[in-house]
Every structure is written in C-alpha cells, then in structure tokens.
Image 1 (tube, helix red, strand yellow):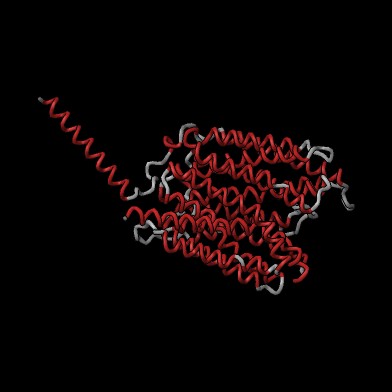
Image 2 (image 1 turned 90 degrees about the horizontal axis):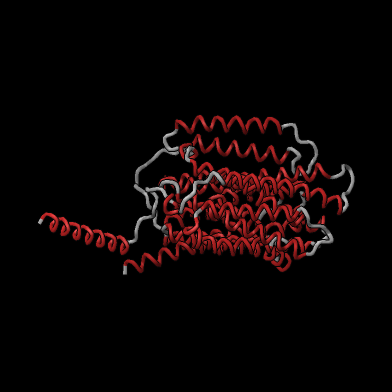
Length: 502
C-alpha cells in the first residue's frame, strides 16, 4: 500500500511539473500572436520589443538563483513560488492599461518563469533513477515542443474570438492546477540545516547578465542603427561584475555559481557546447520565419508554420533519445545531433525562391532531429555527473548557458543581416535572401564549433560516468529488496567461508 501511495504521489508531482513546463513554454510564443493587437489598443509601438525583452531578461537572470535556492532548501517551495509569481504577472499583464505597465508585469511573469523549466528538470532528476530519467526528460521535451506548436495558434484564436487579455488570463486556472499537484504530491528532501544564502553572488549574476542583455539590445546588433552612448559602459560593467563574481564565489560558503563544478571536465565541456547550441537553436527560431516571409515571399501564416518540421523532429527524437542514450552514451548522441544541425543550416544556405518547399522542410526536420538528440543528452549528462547537492544549480546552469547563447546568437545574426542590407532603402526579396543566407552561414560555423566542443565530452556509458553521490533515494520496496538480496549474498559468503575453513 505504501509503495502504491508513493507511486501515485510521484505521478501527480510529475503531472504538475509537466503542466508548469507547458505554461512556461507556451508563454514564449502565444504572446507573439497577440502583440500586434496589443500595440494597437495600448499604443506605445516604440516599446513593442521590450514586451518580449523584459520577459527574456528576467527569466534568464533568475535561472541560477532558483537553482541554487532549490538545492539549499528544497524544490517544492520554490517551484510553488515560481508558479505564484508567474500567475500574478499573468493576471497583472492581462489587466495592463499602458505598454509600460505591460512591460513591468511581463518582467514579473518572466522572473517566475525562469524557475519553471530548470526546477522542473531538477524535480524529475530527484524523483527518477538514471534508467527512468531519460524517458521522463524526453517527455518534458515533448511537452515543450507541443507548446511551441500550440502557442501561436492559441494566441491568434483567443485574440480574435475573445480579447488579447485572455492570452494572459488563461494561464491562471492551469497554473493553479499545476501548483496544487506539485504542492500536494512533492516532498522535499532536505536536512533541515540552515545554510547561508549567497546574496552577493546572486546580485552579481543578475547585474552582470542584465547589463549584457541591455548592452546587446541597445548596440544596434538587432538591425538598428549605431548604438546608444551607454552601450560601451554597459558592456564594460557586465565584464567587471563578472570578474567580481568570480572573486566573490571563490570565498562564499555556499556559492551561487560553484566554480568547482566548472573545474570538472565534463561540466565545462557540456556548458561550452550548450552555449554554442543556444546560439544555433535560437537563431533558427528567430530567423527562419523571417526568411520564409521576407526572402521566399511566403505569407504570415506560412512563416508561422515554418518551424513545425523542426519542432516535430525535436519532439520525436527527444523521446527516442531518452530511451537509447543509456545504451549509446552522451558523446555519440551529441556529436551526431550537432552534425545534423550543422548540415541543416548548411542546407538552408542553398534554399531560394525556386527551391521546393519540401527541401526547406527536410532541412528543418534534420535540424530538429539534431536538436532533439543534443539538447536532451546535454540535460541528462549535466544532471548525472554532479553530486546530488548540486543537481539544481547544475541543471539551472545548463539552461542558463543556453539562454545566454540564444541572446548572443540572435543579436549577432541580426548584425550579420543588417550589415548585408542596403542602407536607407527597402530591401528586395533577393537582397533579403542574400543577407539571411549569410546569417545561416554564420550559424553553420557556430554549429561546427559546437561539434568541436562536444569532442571534449568524455566517452563512456552514462552508468560509468554517474557521480557516486547522485542517485535518488530508493523507494521503500526497492530498498527492502536490495537489502534482502545483500543479506542473502552475505549468508552465501559465510557458508562458503565455512566450507573453505573445513
């Protein structure tokens, strides 16, 4: 009976995590479909991009904070805090009367969303064994992929049939259901010992990343003009606070970013590869729809559907990867996946207006297959090679590096496109195609560098690379069976010793 109750609790907690992940994932795309209507009704078109940037900024800078706090004091309470902040931000965003208000409330929403995905991954890492974890993380990736497809369609229909405000209000009932599931079923595994919080490290991480994102947004890398006068000081401040962070973390009792993790060859290789993968992944998501509409002359609907082959390939391959990675190993999966991503971007550089639509879909599907193999393998590897006390911060750090890579990649490819277009005049479709092809060549190079980085990932099967202080606590029945088996082996050993002595 006890085993059945524990199994039910685990299933309910998992359902809550999947629901929270769906909320965070769908919010990144559902708002895009509603924003033209929002700008018409609230005005402030000049603030348009900041509705997205505010969410991205706070969701990125909060990732390390949530991961570390959950390691210190348990996943449950902070997962519930994240859902609460996300829902309060959603309700306020739906009630916003001006664009500045909407930007502020989206920032609050993003601060909560920053913990939903990495803490969800960490919760699954706690609940499931090494053998089970691949399948569950694959399911989590599948939920993310489905949300990416559903989001734009939902945003468009809800805005057209009801109001753009319901794009935010619909989060509330689903978020409450996820909170009830996690709150009632999840049990924190903590020692009860009070440990210090690295407030200085948290402040330095957020300040450095905030300055970096602000500098990139104002530097003209996104296609704007020459950059604002504060851009250079912002870059300098980001670098200065990053150096100060290293100094502070070396002395902290419970560092927000444990530098000893980065001294591990596996963690360093995974972080570097994840950073480069983030550049490629977010570049495809940001610029493939633009390529379809402005370069190939497709409609807005066709541009919105362009990424469907990529997402479907990602979802299907994530589920397959979760089942086979334990038998193949992390490095072969990552190397194969990144090779597919590289070939996919290379194929995009040869797509033109005369090309078949199926050729574009095939290239995007190949990229999706590669991302499905790569992203899940990186997550599982990062979780399995660290000690249990660092599970949350390591998972969050992996997500953090990919998010930073995405922000940098979108800005850099925007710079490549802007620098390839004629100044002061509307570009033709042919000129836009050439400019975006150059961006895809850049993404091809970055993907190839990610392949080189992945070579540094140690070889071996996951069971051989897992950290000794890592596996989740055994469930009661499993522990009893293992103790009984161990007792029987000891008894056999004593009988054998007795026979030898005789």
